[in-house]
Length: 558
Image (cartoon, rainbow, N blue to C red; front, side, top):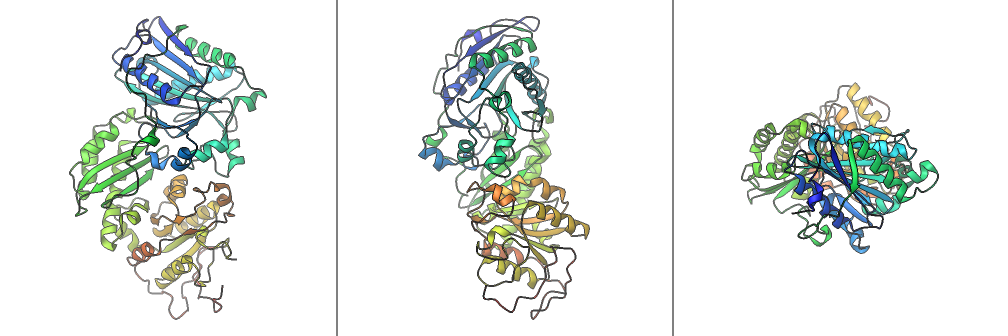
C-alpha cells in the first residue's frame, strides 16, 4: 500500500522532520487504522527517514489487537444491534473502546529512534506521551508492558506497537474523558484493566484529564502538548503533514466477516492460558480420527510480537499429530527472539501446546465432546491431567452454581438437598473421600488454596468460568498445585457484567455445572481408603472452611 511521500522522505538521525497530521473532527476508526498501516508500510524500508505523527478523535468503535480472537473479546450481538463498528488495528494488544473523548496518537518512525526492542520502544513511547501529559498538568508513571498510570494506579493511556522492516508504528490512546458503561457493554473481556468490582470501581481504575484537571482541555491545547513533547523527545522539527493517500480497501468492519473463532469445531477444541501480561489461545481443528491437526490458530493480546507469529505457529502445526505438538512448537519457539516478544516468552507457547495435549488425552480417556474439552482449564506444572487427577484430594465448587434461593449459597457448605448440581458435586467428592467446599469469593479462594498447600495437597478438581480463570490466573499459578478445572455455563457474572457482585459474594443469578463432564472427570479420581460410607465420614476437617466432609443432612427438603 502506497502513501504520501512526505511520510518518510526527509531527515536523518541527526536532524529529523516530524510530519504532523491533526484531526479535530471525529473520524472513522477503520479509516484511521488504514492510514496508519499505509504509513507504516511506506516507511518500512527506510532507517533514517522522517517521522509521521497523527493525532485523532475517533468515532465510537471497538478495536481489537492484530492477533486477537473476535468472539472472545467483543459482545458481538450488542455491537451489531447498536451499529458499533469493530475494527482490527495493525498493532498488537488488547480490545479497546474508542470514542471522541479519547485522543488517538499514531507515530510512525524508524525503529532505531525508539529503541532496540519492542519493549524498549513501548517504554520510549510511554516516556514521550508522559511528557505530553505533564505539559497538561498531570504526572504519570510507566507500568510495563504498555500503560501509563497516575498516582494511585489508575490508567490514563495505553500504547501498542507494530513493525514493518526498519519502521515502527506506535499507537496510543490518551483518555480525556471515558464512558465506562459504553466500554463495559461493548467489550466482552472482564479484565483488571477495566474493573474488578463493577462500574464504580471501573471509574476508579481509569483516570481522565477531565477528572484530574477539573475541566475539559481544549483540543488545540492537548494537541499542542503532544506535538511539543514528541518533537522535543525525538529531536525533530515539527511541520504540517498530509493525510496518507491510503490505496485499496480500508480495514474491514469485523462484524461483516465470518469469525473463525466461533463455536468449537466438530472435531477439535480450544486451549487458553495466561502469562503475567498476556492471554494465549490455541484453537485446533482435527481430522475425523481426532489425532491429526487439520488447522491451528493462535490468538493473543500481547502488547507486541512479530506480525507472523500466529501464522508461523499455525504452519508449524499443519499436519502434525496432537502428540507431536509440543515438539513442533518447541522447534518453532526456538527460532523466536525473546527480545521481540512483549507479554509472553517462547516457552509459554510450548506450555500452551503441552496443556492442549494433556486436555486431548484426558478427553480421549473419558469421552468428552469438543465443548467439554474446550471447557477444561489446567493449572500447575503437570503435563498429564490423568495423572494429576490420580492425586486429587479436594474439590472446589463456585457458589454461583447454587440456586439464588439457597440459604447456603453464600457459605462453604452444602446439605445435598437434591435441588441443584452442587449437591451432586458434593456427593461425587464425598464418595471418593475428598474434601469439598464452596468458594464464596476471591478472598476465600486465596485462603482455601493457601490452606491446601500448607497441608500438602498437590492436586485438586474445581469448577469456575473461564473468565474467572483468566482474570485470577495468578492465584491458581502461585498456589503451586496441579488443578483440573471445568467451565461453568449459564448466567455468569461476567456475561451479565456483575463482577462487582461476584467479587463481594453477592451475585444473584445462577450458573450451571456440567454434571456429565464432572462425573467423567471424577471417575478418574481414586477412592481413598477413608471415603464416606453409609452416611458416615471418617475424614476430619483439616482447615477452617475446607474440610467439609460431613454426612448428608437428614432433612433433604431444602
